[in-house]
Length: 156
Picture 1: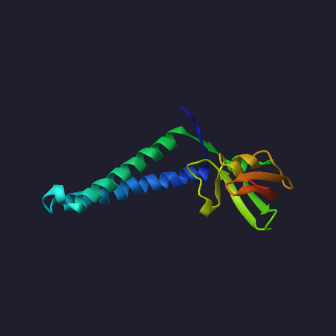
Picture 2: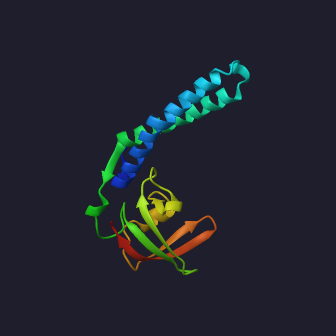
Picture 3: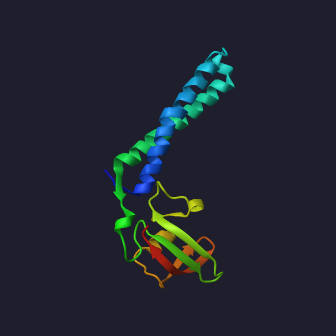
């Protein structure tokens, strides 16, 4: 069984989503299917087919989240320090634009760039591992190489 590295906060978020899917979303979709069945002929019942499709998506997500939790190896970020590793929060400066960005290095289940969560397996994630404050990194991006300087590393 492959381990999935995840932060304590990530596990909590997954558990919360799983609880909502099971206790709220699943019940709502079962009711929606029952209501659609009551409308009659299922062969041309768009509400029924839509609800069944949504039920499939909910059940797939529940299965996916349960699988993550079963394989999860929880990393307590507060116990870490030093060079950049999984769980680090890293502030970077784009050497060309001067723009500053901050990411936390996380596993795939937690990754969400809009929330500042960078997948450790991305080109940038891999380039950051083992670096320290003041180090420069080069990242191969789709539009060419990008250069960053590590401004700050923290584990909070």
